[in-house]
Length: 377
Image (cartoon, rainbow, N blue to C red):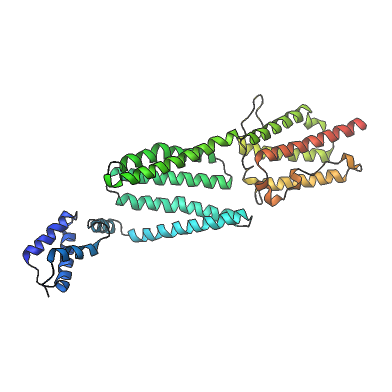
């Protein structure tokens, strides 16, 4: 057994202090462990300093001071490792559920919405907050804590924006733009000016900042380009023109038959539901052209939503109307309209503008047929 001298003990203790371990109890514990190992394994012919360096490397991954940080975490945060396990489990489960939910949504299988909802809620309200809680404790200064806080906040807002978009809830655009603004004017400057100050992180900071800037630019470009889609503009103009023509025919008073009134009323209910989701109003504002973005008609037009039931009610009303017409020429055509759509795929097959146009065209057909029958009578 090797016998360590007092000078060697003093050398080990001073080296532990030089490596950033400031807690006295921890210094003495490390000293005791290192001395025990060296007494057991060091040979008389071995080089003391080289063997000490090889021995002390067993106690850390990057630097010796990380032992003190782990000790402080354990002393001040008793559930540190439990929180780490929860973080890993919540992250893995949310990613898995999101992938499975996305596949279910593409295949139109039941359970897609609940899987995606659970995945994003777990990711944004469990995984990201735990990351902030753990990483902020490991941060060495306030700048690093601010970067972690801003990154987690941006991630939470962005993921909730994605959830609102998938679930067709109001507020999607607000959350999306908030995430872009937080990333562009909060996260990016904080991260860049914090990392660029340290030579060892300078290159990685520049690379990540470039990637982050590109991602923010693409997100912003997608938001702006959606409004300049010529096809969407043409669809909106087609709907507005059809709506103007319908109103010019005084359609609410032009029909007297109860069957045709049922069709008109159901179409109005469908349009009100779509417009409420698109422009936050149940009807078009008078005297000005509204901005209607082409997007999903709303959550009511998926699954067993109220919109799906209204379209089914419209289909039944048109069937009753056509059955009551002895002359085939007086019947309302059902081809190339929302009446042919599978109710389970309504929200996927029809955008809000397509649905508005189809329903308005159907109303026009009813009014024209009624006026023709009135003129013949």
